[in-house]
Image (tube, rainbow, N blue to C red; front, side, top):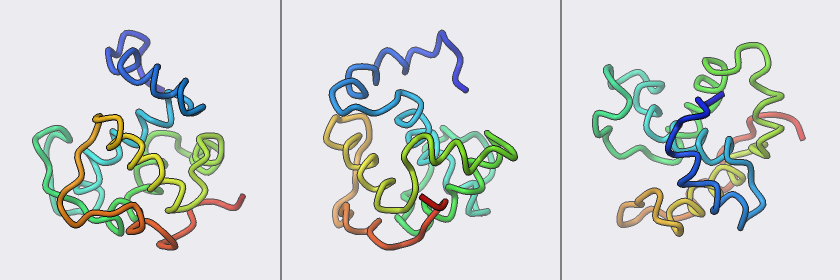
Length: 123
């Protein structure tokens, strides 16, 4: 899914090992957060052009769209394999990345913002 020479793989490999997560899961979430405004339909252009803050609800709405773009008809299988069944699972990964200083949260953002928002796939 990501290129073998992607330098971010090395950056998150230790985090993935410490928390028993797949590197792909961490990179999916990082990329999702950068592209969520575009998948919300209001921010064209390059995903890494300093996108605006995105709410938990907007990020959750972007998950199936982004996953379909990456994995096509296998998007539900991919999300299930990454352990991203619902918004709470996503929130745990987001805030793990915040704790590990791979992402930044804004004042007022909380892990609970992701709780009970939606379900992406059946368990």
